Image 1 (tube, rainbow, N blue to C red):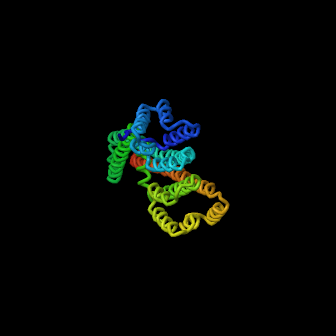
Image 2: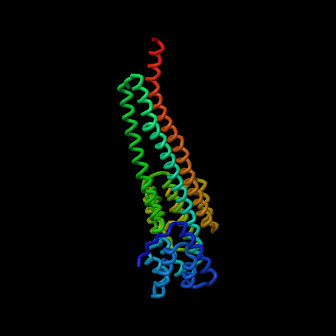
Image 3: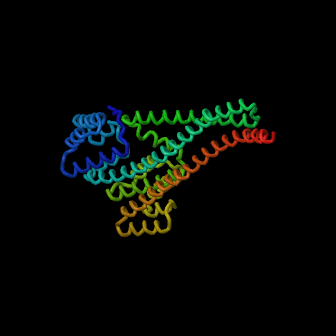
Amino acid sequence: MQSQCRLSSERLAVFCLEMGMLVRSGVDLSAALNALGADAASSLERDLYQSIHQQMEAGASFSEALAAAGAFPDTLVWMIQLGVESGDLSLILDSMYDYYTREAELEKEIKNACVYPLIMLAIMTAVLFLVVYKVLPVFNGVFLQMGISSPAWLVLLMEIFHVVVSLLIILCVLLGAGLLIVGFESKMGGRQLLTSWIKRVFIRSKINKWSDIGRFYSIMELCVRCGLPMEKAFTFMLQLITHPQLQEKVKQCQIEYSQGKSISDCVDEMQLLTHAESCLLHLGEQSGEAAMVYRRISDTYMKKAEEKINETVNLLEPLLVGLMCFMAGSILIALMLPLMNAMLVIGGA
């Protein structure tokens, strides 16, 4: 039975952490699921854990029950299956906790980066709405009382600003409706909807590229630390990576590894690392500290992605403020020119 509850990265991290602690303490999986269900944050999650427990009671394995629930990504299901088969389930769960924690942090950065410009856009729209629909009628009334006819260029400019403000209002309404839908669906798995849409929009951006590189080395770290087969790891990576250029490089890396090359040589030929990072990678493999090196490289590129997000937000703020000031200033200047001309005429008379 497919669950309607799709867990976010944050909830997946909590699930991995709690299950890891229970498994490490010797609690069997069925009892662990009952404990999670008793402490579930919502009724949907409680029903989810009960459904998984019922699947296991019917004879399904832990990974099969997770897959049948439909609330967990294939990534996690596959890793848990390998953990059960290898007897290192607690280690796998701890590693996946680290992975989903980093994913949750990145998703939070992406969402914050989108919400802030939307707020600025709403403020800009409100200010321009007041200027166009409240201030302009007052000036038009003054013009009529003074017997001044508005010049043709001013009338055209006002019409243009009316259209711009109308479009901004429609845009804000649509974006607001989208956010309400995402908020409504958050209990049904909609928390990742906005993030996944943003990722598709910026699929070729540096933000997406650096975050995908971070994911690649994060998975490499998981596989090395847990002793998982690299052949399956490459297939797993291709499901997570969305940047087209990086996808091609991972496929080439997979081919070269199947031909007998070492992991460090294959990764080095992807030409994604600096010279210092490449040297560190080879030293890590020779010293048996490859997992630590992969973790450090992953953290570096995840941080780069977050810095790029903050840089984009910091760039959008002055742009939006400048645009608002330009439009509002243009309207006011256009209104003041006829008044100044009229005052000069009256003064001359």
